[in-house]
Amino acid sequence: TDKPYAIGQGELKYDDAKRIAGLEFWKWPASYHTHGEWQHGQWLIAGLSDDAAVIDLAAWPPEIYHWECDVLSDITPAPQGGWMVISRTGSSREDIKFHLWHHAARQPGLSTLKESVASPGDHLQGIVILNDSVYAFEPKHLYRWTASEGDRPPTLSPVESFPVAQGHTNIIDSDEYAHAELTCGDGQKVLLWDGDGYELIDGKLKLTWPLDVRDSYFGFVTAPSSPDGFFYLQNSTFWQARRGEKPQRAMTAFDNIMSVQPGPDGSLLFSLGQNDAGYLGGIWFPNDDEYIPILPAEIDPKIEPHYLDTLHWSEETEHFYLLSWSGVYTFPGDALLSRDRVNLPDAPQDEDPVDVEAESE
Image 1: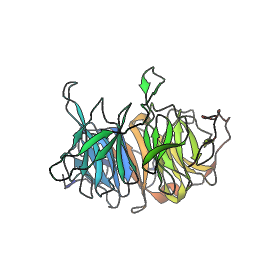
Image 2: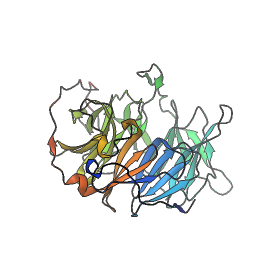
Image 3: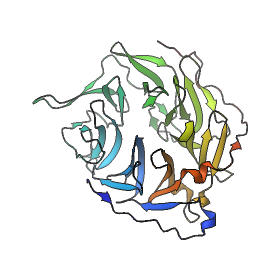
Image 4: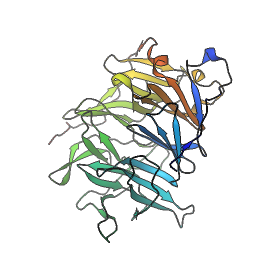
């Protein structure tokens, strides 16, 4: 739909002294947030149990749009403008299909499924853009998308001479595959395929980042770092990869990190799983190795922490956005950034995830 959900100021019914100053709550326009969140520029998209919600991070008060897109699996800006989208249609094992399609409008949610190409195998999981070429992956296979031209519909073709993913067995004894799109601090894109990084060089995908990532149970999580590198999660711990160097542990004080998002002034916003200190997460400043913690009670003492999800930042509104099962919590940046920063304690280093020098080409 092209109309924002009508929202009013949130009503938080507990002692103001216990919450972050300026905290407000905004309910989802339909159903509940159950999976997936994607932040691209001014748009924050959250997967709902039915369809998706689109938040305009440049508008205040927040504008939340209901997008009728079935089940959203992935979305990323398209090289030709608009968006590349993977969505799922169908409800039973016999009729479920995963579709890759181009959403031509600038704002997510203004286009519906059309000129799509269905998954040729098990199901499409994600999209990677390399040098203006569009790729999509299933658990074992990588495909290249070609746009429609004239009467010819869009196509999805296997990438020739590219290895079939072997995967690994995860902590619940099921097969997992570590695939994703990585972004370096300078904007360079890297394909993570079966745990290692590939770049498009002279028209061919070449292994240039031997990372040996073997944990994707919670989905692969990454954030840009230096111009020639990126941060990522492995086994719920934080790592930094730089071109030509072995990955190194970062923010070693925590070993149960669930998500990471870019924050203000070069910071990273992180969420934690269950921990003895009872923290929800916080803001980490890599240059100083300091952070500002957040407690669940500062958001809502009546909600179970596992119903709170990822924390996001908007430069335009200078507000934080915390996604939850039932809606979005917002609070001004100064309410958190004005707090004293805490030094991160040292923690034992785990073994490096690779035993070979990273290659560069």
